[in-house]
Image 1 (cartoon, rainbow, N blue to C red):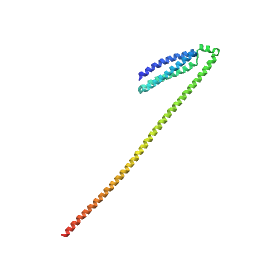
Image 2: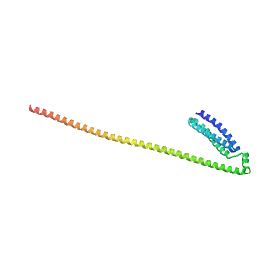
Image 3: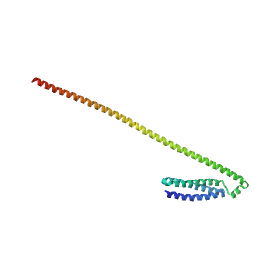
Image 4: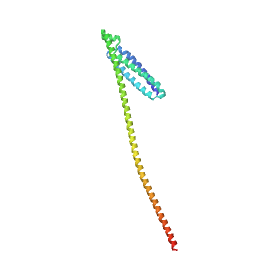
Length: 217
C-alpha cells in the first residue's frame, strides 16, 4: 500500500510543479491565450484533487502503526493544494505591469485598487463557503448518527418483542405442564387409595374366612 502512496506522491509533485509554473504565467497573458491557460490549470487542479482522494484512500489501508506518518504527509499536500488554489484565483484577476499598462493605461492604479477589493471579497466568499461546507458536513454526519440510532432502537424493539413472545410461550408451556402434572398426581393418589381399599377388603375377607372356618370346627 505504501508503494502506491509514494507513486501518487510522485504524480502529485509533477502536477503541482506544472501548475505552479502555469499560475505564474497567467498574469502575463491576456485575451484568449489567458483563457485557455486558465482552463488548462483548472483541469490540472482537478486532477491534483483526485490524486489527493486516492492518497487518502491509500492511507486508510495502511496499518495503524505506520498511518500517522502518512497522514502528516497527506495533510501537508492538502495545505499545498489550498495554497495553489488561492494563487490560481489571484492570478486569474491579476495582470503583469506590462499587460496592465497596455490594457488600462492611466487607469492602472484604479484597477489595482479594484483588483485588491475583488480579491478581498473573493477570500471572504471562500471563507463563508468553507464554513457552509463544514456546517453541511456536520448536519450530514448528525443525520447519519440519528439514522443509526433509530435503526438500533428499531432492532432493539424487535428483539424485546421476540423475547416477550418467547416468554409468553414459555408461560403457556409451563401452565400446560403444571396442569398435566397436577392431573397425574391426582390419578396417582386415587390409584393408591383404591389399592388401599382393595387391600383392606381382601384382608377383611381373609380374616372373616378364617374366623368362620375356626368357628365351624
